[in-house]
Image (cartoon, rainbow, N blue to C red; front, side, top):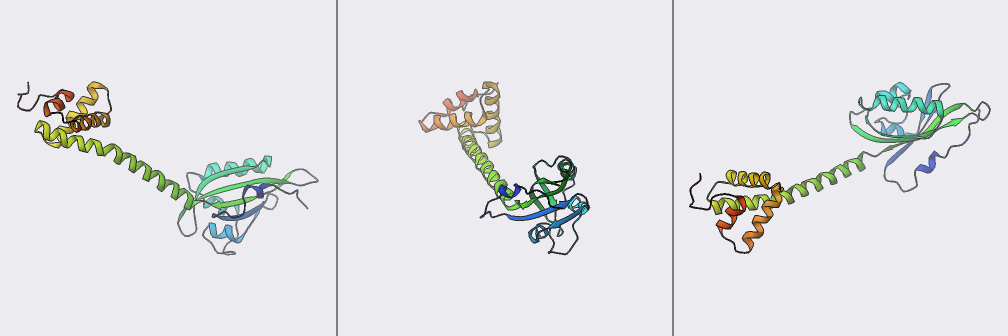
Length: 216
């Protein structure tokens, strides 16, 4: 039996840095064929195991397994192109992130879907790098927010002769009362003191008693 060709291979171009493996799944015999790269993506050496649907699904992350199973079932019925990004636990116990793409091949005589063919792509490194960059951006954003707040706390503590915890409470209360973000109140305090304003001016912004004035 000769099945019609597929265009799935066009999904990847030469020069990719990801480990990419091919697969073929015969629906009639339920037999899988894996390229050497696909074995390695799953943590095996080529020929270590006989790939089956049970084995393929067993390596999927438990949270992703039902979705991937439904994907293969749907592709077997329709033959339509499919793709998924999901996690696996490889044979060495490592969590990896894969992209799988494929489509059905139809028997030219019966026109029934006879095979699923496509690629497994290990995108673990790319996902980790993106996550790391996102974390770095988040950390930098947090630091950019915290820096003026910490500076303002010091200014307030000195100007009002209070400790830093009380200084932050003054910032927080002013933020709540004026409906202005704490970081923006902090920046206003910093800008005010940069112009040579007095402690009384700081107290006025915060709605706090000036130094030496008893609290009521």
